[in-house]
Amino acid sequence: MAERYECFGLTDLVARPEDAFRLASLAITGGQRVRGYRGDYYRYFLGDAQVVVRTMGDPDTGEEQLLGMDVQHAEGQLWDCRVVKDVTPAGADPLQRRVLVVAEGTEDTAVVDVICADVLPDWEPGRRLRLRVSACPLRLHYDDEPCQPVVEAQQDTVLLQGIVKDVRVGETYMGLEPMTRFISATVSTSMGDVELCHVSEMVAEEQKDFVRVGATVSALCQLSGDAAAGEYAGGVVFGEDQDLVLLRDFFLHGGAQRLRSVMHSECRYSNDYAGVTVEGADQVTALLRDMETDMAGKWAVRYGRISSVEQIGANPPACAPGKRCLLLAPADKPEQYAALCLVETDSLGRIRNLLLSRDPRYDFEPEA
Image (cartoon, rainbow, N blue to C red):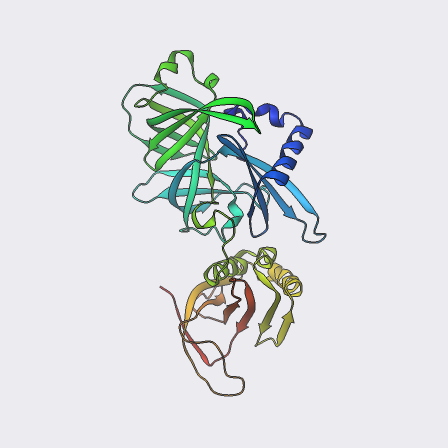
């Protein structure tokens, strides 16, 4: 989706399949690995641009699959926004994501192709995002007329209008060998600054004098946003809160293989009302994969907390009041909770124990 190599003058790098494969291989062997839940990304810097390779292991064979590559500015501008809707097109691979987002304090919306998307546990509406955003125009117009900053989402593109805050000449190179130059214009918009990247040939001759600070630019463009930023710069973050988000996404949509990546090797799954216990991460994952087809879409899931625990009977619950959990209810009766989901983590935040329970000794309450 985010494959606008021509905006950086890099079309020749991927002109033939063998050229693209050579670049991907170079990124995998010499780039920075960013771990996702379902696969890995490899970030490879080419000066002021970067390519990000998407790879994923086949869940049946374990063989590594090369899914594709994205390209964007090496840094981009930070956006704090939230998800309005997941608009990922049919046919996208599991490590790709396209979302409609909105920034606080504005009604403008933008469609963003998210790079390194699988470092985040879910894409539910309302999720807050921190993305490093850059824009690649399909067409653009510079002038010196005043303008009202605008960001308007189209189906898979964005109509962007704003004031140029900075202009630099971006350079790409491989090793010590220079390759191309492109224009990198920082544009102030209603949703935040955007790094607009394009070669000089995309600017009409009569507009080239307006490629400067203080000018106005209007562009129909594709936005890309790198999710491996802030606390997610190195990839997936382990922890009980993230595990619960991931589990909620599993109960709603499936995706047992994503859960496998956050399990301790000796993970234990227990269902106290069905009398099922399974041990070992691979065995637990296999069970969850069998469950997900029948389960996905049939649950309403809320976050909750254990409010009290009766320490009576045989094998009293070890869980302490205040612990977070998931509350599961039938999708058509969301207030009639049928089970609790509790997790225990190891010192790294990986799932050590996963419990589905109807034990009446637990008292709980939904989170606001």
